Length: 432
Ligand SMILES: [Zn+2]
Image (cartoon, rainbow, N blue to C red):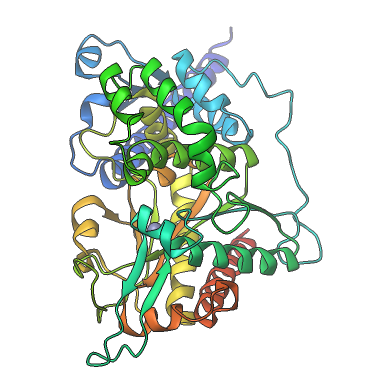
């Protein structure tokens, strides 16, 4: 080899290595800061991962980390291809995690479903999932869920009528109104609950109790989640309807919501809730407070990475841009809440759960919070908590109309989501 070529190759290789080193240093810094700032709420999860020049490794526990036995490992160069798995409407990313190592995208030959977003309408080609929080279709079920507002008539404090409604009624009506608005702009919309009072299983909670409760208890016992003794209690008359809801149904139904959203593989997911003033304990009379806020994933606590599915979600939030996109989306939605509803946006010190379980995102009114759905729903999402239902003016406004799709305040909330979604989509278009 002529010496000039040797010098050229030497310079080329050194330059390439140096560039690679600089890129890796940037990656180490970016992902370490992201993990520490948005994912590890109590700075207690260092035993579950490493981020260094070799890439990212996840560990099941501290013993495995000390023994250099990762549960999953990925090199820097493979991350873009691994992230492509997020575009498939199945759990191929989680399956790959469980194989321990990423060895290429086996799905690469099958292109992920693409849709044409260049239609005439503003949301042509967009797939949007809407999850209307809770299940109650009436005040009675709201009482079982403990997600209802009930104030006695009290003219002394200015309540000339009694107040009674359930959050699930408001969220479902909002979802229906929002669906219509989004469809009119060309979007394809999927609701996790198909009628007022429906659960994500497609039936009411009462029907689910009749057809599926016993099966659910049996399988929890088989999986070792509950003891045989506990199973007996769950199937005995001592276990109340509220117990069945709270201890068995709630978690598996949230799991179901996440599964059907991920199977639908939406471009955007909107999770709708209405909030209450947490300091208004007993909820026997209205509060003067009123705020809006939104949640995205992250903020895992010290005890939150005990199972491999949760460690997988931690890794997904770390290495994909699901979290960054959810921050931007949530920010547009919460800005729209404030503007449309003339209710202020919460700061981190406005509630105990914000101070103690959340992390403020860079955008105002957006908080990382490790809720079952912010963790398990993949892609870009907003988990909206609009206004306080127990606020004096709000409870009176929300109490109007039996059919909540006719309620003026609920219509405004649907409008606020709609404009937030449009603003996000249009801002994204402008920055392309
Ligand atoms: Zn709620």
